Amino acid sequence: MILTESRIAGVFVVDIAPQADERGHFARCYCAEVFGRHGIRFAPVQCNLSFNPYRGTLRGLHYQAPPVPDAKLVRCTRGAIFDVVVDLRPGSPTRGEWIGVELSADDGRALFVPEGCAHGFQTLRPESEVFYMMGAPYRAELARGARWNDPAFGIAWPEPAPRLNARDAAYPNHRA
Image: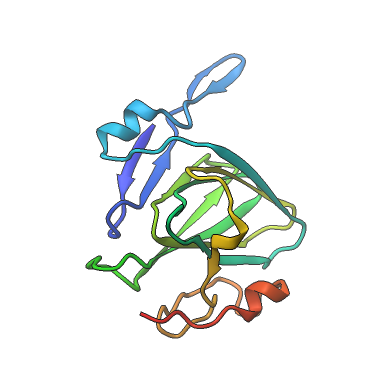
């Protein structure tokens, strides 16, 4: 695995390093020891799968509030997505900033989202599937969201008119 920290502290792009032979390839996707060497303490407690039949589907921006904030390791296992992280951490020098990374089943790339950051993605292909490893169990009463097109963030989504569900469409703009 190759971990590359983004311009937002604690947000890492995780690339696999496949070992190929006549059978195909094998690659490590997560290793607590490797993550620890990068200062990441992440112990997955839950895994989730999101299937999205349509291109342009947008899910997010989601996060879980204290006292049980959630970190995530997000990988696209089928199709492709534009994955976004927004830094909402109080006192962070990059608070309010975002990064976007394309993840696809073709390259096996993943994105690590630390606690205190909002996460969302938009599908770039139909029939896209996203696998999440979660650092905290989902707690509905702590689930929060910020508006996908909040002008304070200025996220440049690939599809300007996304397919949204009612909950994500109704999230308010984030207040600093």
